[in-house]
Image (cartoon, rainbow, N blue to C red; front, side, top):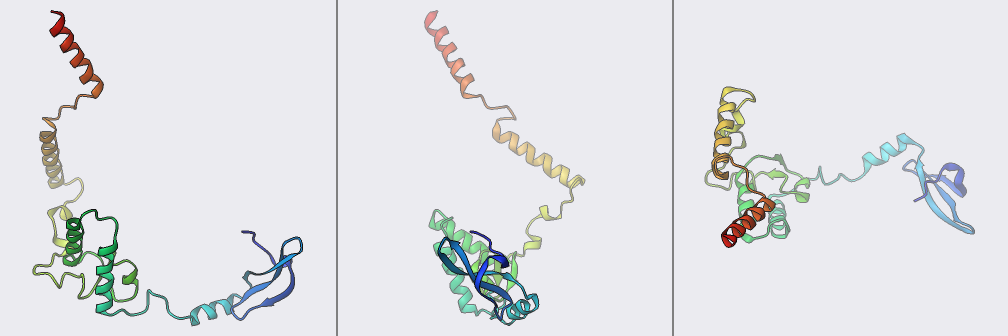
Length: 188
């Protein structure tokens, strides 16, 4: 898209009530089009912008509307492959109070990022979980003795899963060993 300047206006130059400069410009030989050029009167533009209707982030939302938005998000979201995973995520969101609490239309756009009072703030669950006291990990200080002990414990568990910390054999090495085995078995 071509950016036009005030010099490109050939006729109909005017400053609109919102502070924008507009007029007819040449877009091709023999063709004209009405275009907005840019903001000229910044004060008028500021006044006009403030008078406009409030956006979704400031309009209030009802609990029933928030419930509809919450259910719609979890029914239509493609990131959950099974109904069980979908239900687990929905329950997790309902029972944890780990997100910013809002009461506006902002919730309608992304209910997975915000909490709405009475919908997914943990009040609907038998034992709501508080985000701040979920785990001892939140209280570990980096470099402390407790953190080092926890790290050593996790490393030991990881090594036990892998077979004592041994590296897995590559496919290339496995093929070589298998060929050598059969060669030794059938030549002798």
